[in-house]
Amino acid sequence: MKFLKVVPRSRFLSVAGGISVAYVFLHLLPELGHFQSELVGELEGGTWAFIESHIYIVAMIGLAIFYGLEVMVKKSKKGKDGQVRGGSGVFWVHIGTFTLYNSLIGYLLVHDHFENSWGTFFYFIAMGLHFITNDKALRTSHEDDYDKYGRWLLTAAIVIGWMVGIFTEVADVVVSFLVALLAGGVILNVMKEELPEERESSFLSFSIGMVSYSVLLLFI
Image (cartoon, rainbow, N blue to C red; front, side, top):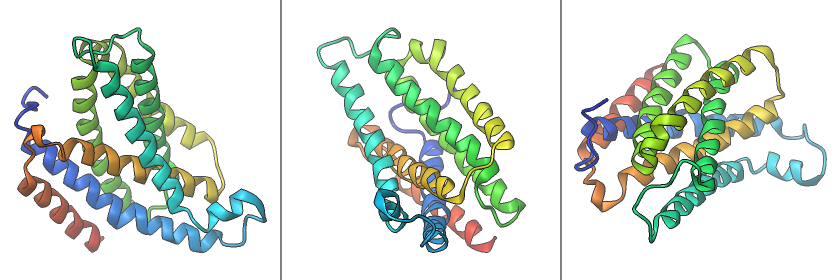
């Protein structure tokens, strides 16, 4: 998508970010509350029982993981020419984590508890636009290495996650953990692209995406 310039930030990317954030706050986070109310008492004793009653901790952990990745990538560029090499551990850790992230999104396309086909459709749209935002960010960070290796791994990961979801069945508590990790990851990955001053992001475009998608979600 050649029209997605880095600076000023494409309005399309800001709209996509707003849509992703709306989806997290109006679907994923309320779903975590639903999971938490249903899972109370299913896990007996120990750490799991604590997390059962504090599922939002998992979302916070997901946010922290991706924040840590961004810090790692930025530090790896200091004193170099600004590009992370394809053979570096930093590149593979970064892409490896997003490969798991994309697999998770593909997996939840099957196992998330959508009330109807519209719920599945809106998940598909929100996460599809989120992929575009992540793709632009990762290409900016890794340039040729991303085009040569990263994009293919991330594309395959979605399909693999979806196929695993078709052939496996897991407990609701596992699905709730996965949804929580996804919620935290989406929030961080969107806001890290929108907030930096040098991005010259469009608050109006972000707001349009967020408000319009919120209205659609409230009507399904």
